[in-house]
Structure formats: C-alpha cells, structure tokens
Length: 246
Image 1 (tube, one colour):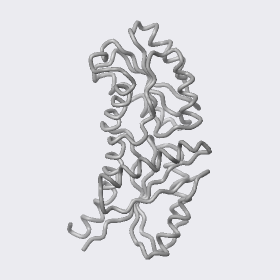
Image 2: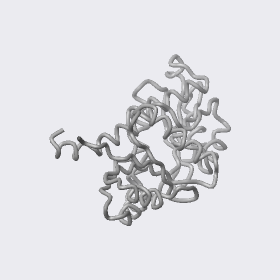
Image 3: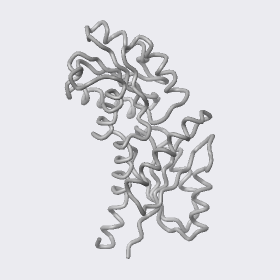
Image 4: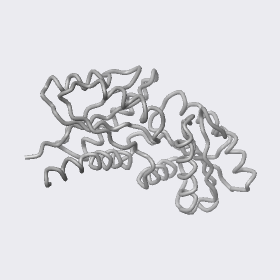
C-alpha cells in the first residue's frame, strides 16, 4: 500500500506574530480539506519550528517521503535558493520532493476576488472599479513578470483596469498605482494585496492604499489558497504514484 508523503509547508517567517498565526490557520484549513494527510509546518526564519528541525524530527520518527511546499506566490529567491539549500541538508533517509510555488493559479484569482467582495465590492462593481494588484515585490525579474501577467489576466475578467504594484524592490508602489487608476477615470479604486499573511510589507501596502476606496485583506487562510496547496502537493506526488503503477 502506498503511504502518502508528509506535506511540509515551508513559510518564510516573520517577527510579526500575525504571520505565523495566519500560516497555522491556513495549514489547519488544508488539514480539514484532506483528513488523514499529515501536514507539518516549518519556518525559514524568525519562527519555530524551523524547517531543519521538522525534517530532523520526521527522520527520527522513521518517515521516508516528504513533499516540501514553499508557501510562496512567486518563484523567486527563496524558492530557487533558500529552500533548496535547507532541503539539501536534510537527513539522508528522507526522500524529499519540492513542490511548485502557489502562483499563478486561477484559484488565487478567485481568492483575490473573494477578499474584494468581503471588503464591500460586488460583481456589479467590476466594470467601474480599477484594482491595484499589490505584491510584496522582488528583485527577481521572473517574479515581477509573473505579477504583471496576473494583472493582465485578471483585467480580462471584467475589471475597469488592473495595475500591478510592489511594496519593495520594484516599482510602481501601491500609492502610485492608485493615482494612475484615478487618472484613468475609474469610478472606484480597490487595492488587493497579493500576499499570504500580514507583516511589514503588507502593512506598507495598506499605507499606500490610503487614497483608495477599498482595501482587501491578505489572502490568508482562504479556502482557495488551501485548495492550491493541495493541488501543488498532488502534483509533486504524481511521479512517485506513476512509478508504483498507481
């Protein structure tokens, strides 16, 4: 019988306690969607347990197979360098597969819209509302290009306009994108944080949204986000299942 690999959700970590609380809430939702799947959480920095510590504990228990899932929205430095480096230091007995990052995904667009509607908009407002897709930012050109692509895709679902913005490393900032949408003539301007958990950069996004009409909450433990986590886990498991003839 094939034993499902343990899902290890790898979060960045933050000094802001809201970050870890949100990560744990998301993991609990993932567990609720897939009863019986063992899901563990590890942090790269600031919070415990560390990724290294979780991997050591799993190996000591006799676990063999792990899917390590970066709790990241784009494939930037942490997914390309930090996480692979930590996984290379894992106990040799562990067979670890690194899953893809969460974004982009149609489910995440659905989660963004969920947050905007929870903040007071309705589907009837789409054609007259400009949206700022506000991400944390990155120095990685691939990650920046992905955010721009998501903004274009989301615009085609009926919003008046969608503009990307970044809290760090790249331009424009949230407040600049808000002003651009005002100048474009959108009746309303909404800011949709494309971030998973509260913290320093999401707070910067919120400050930049002062001139907007609507500020949505972070994606957090939205059911769509939990669904993407399980999609990425299943995708990482498929090669092993195929090898077993499952």
